[in-house]
Amino acid sequence: MKYFRSIIIALLLLISPTFLAQESTIEKQDIFEKLGEIAIVNQKVMMPMRDGIRLATDIYRPKGDTKVPIIYSRTPYNFNSWGDGKQRTRTAEQAYEVVKRGYAYVVQNERGRYYSEGTWDILGVPLTDGYDAFTWMKEQTWSNGKIGTYGCSSTAEWQMAVAALDHPSHAAMVPQGFGAGVGRVGNIMEQGNWYRGGVEQLLFFSWLYGVEHDKFKPRIPEGATQEDLIRISRFYDLAPENPPLDMKETLAHLPIQDILKNVNGKHEIFDKMVRRKPNDPAWFEGGLFHDDMEIGVPSFWFASWYDVSITPNLSLFNHVRNNTKDLEMRDNQYLVIAPTLHCRYTRATKNTIIGERSVGDARLNYEEQIYSWWDYWLKGKKNDFKEKTPRVQYYTMGSNKWQAATQWPPADANLTTYFLNSKGNANSLIGEGTLDTNKAKKDNPDSFVYDPMNPVTSLGGNVCCTGNAVEGGAFDQQEMEERADILVYTTDVLTEGMEISGFIETELYVSSNAKDTDFTIKLIDVYPDGTAYNLDETIQRVRYREGYDKEVFMEEGEVYKLNLTPMSTSNYFEKGHQIRIEISSSNFPRFARNLNTGGNNYDESEAFVAQNKVHHSKEFPSQIRLPIRK
Image (cartoon, rainbow, N blue to C red; front, top):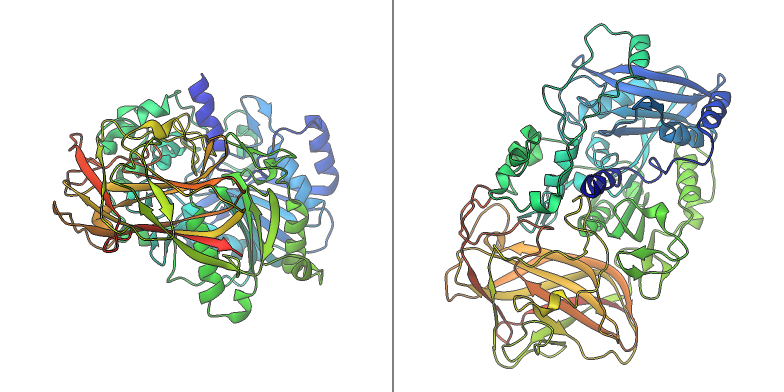
């Protein structure tokens, strides 16, 4: 049962922490009575789309004749008011908080989910469903025509692409933990967290097992009235119950294209996605936002250091700030970066623990700021949001404090280059790998064996939604650093504290006897007692080093330059600490294993054991570039 609970917890983390707060201490009857005193409740409204498909929608709005703005949440998750014969309070609690502030709260299932008609695909495609919903809500007699979109993870990820449709009623948005909605931004092409550096991220393999509905699921017959649906929903929430899995064991199956099939999971959508390469045209036809689209909506963005896609999230914020054609709209973008895991903003406490590391009191007045934002854009209140709210609010771990900046990275963060060096023996913690500001004089490459059948296992990290396979957060990496297939490079002990805030760039010079392989990196804060906490991590498939529109394989004896997807953090390395990086060729099951054959990988089960090298010299200056604040 512990594995089943892990999977359920991971799925719940995909939803906004505000929307899925724990059951209130208020007695259930009390919250429904309190809501009934102030709200008109209209459930199981079947909202029509342009193709005739109807989406199941619950509407909660203030009593009276005053026209009100709308806070709109569209989700693939189950918000039915009843489950297993018991009344659920979560939606009612959120509705109460919204309505008491003078807003209507509209929550809706994506097409094909639960009581919504049609066939489901990730991110609630077609995009026109979002546009049609805005039009329908705007035309209601109780609506003032201003709509704000709100949510975390799957309730956020559809917002950006729909915002690019530029509906006149889409007045503002608050996307939180939105990385799975980001397709391509500049050189980053993650295609909604499916890839990192051309390598499959296995979180969606786990997520789809728990979320995808079977095409033969029970459906409500045509002709059912709203009264019928409300009555039926007390007995049937249409939620599938998945058998428990050991997800760590499940994700180890090869070939990876059969992972869900192997456990009798629902796999129609998975089968399409697992075969797509990073630049497949299908990625550009769904609900992902790409950088050739225009966001013309004021946006209050929320990201977190240990989320699965912190760098793409921050890159999208910068893209909108720097490239949106409407200069006024560039100015209407704000960002908060918390130190938490995916969608756990409001779970910060006086002593916030992320994995094993305490990062201090990371609480923030989220509710106050968000409703001030809504009041400004949806009600037209001339409040002091813009005067009081910094452009960027970010939490610095180590010094454990919230800070403010006018941009990201902070204007006073300057990239400083640290070069990798060793005598050819940087393997493991007992090796001699160093990081310093001087280039190595002679190339003594560090070599290690990468066996895909004995990969480096994931310990903590910037991850979510993998059940019991990977627990996200900061964990002591010393045990991992005993492995000879991990190269370890460390600075001298710092004689004064140093804040690193921004994007961390990595340039490696590598070679291999394999046609194709991967290289990974972790950034680590080493304490005086040796405790080594991971900050961020990334990976690169070598065949995509020249871009994701082509595959260029390696030749033995040749040295190749790799620029990895930047890492991101804000961390204060105290005096007496050290800065460390780990380099290897696997981080599993956070990422899929490269079998080193040069084949498709997704349909392969046999592996080639690779001899991989990292070079460092004046000719091959492997390096990281750290954004150090003065």
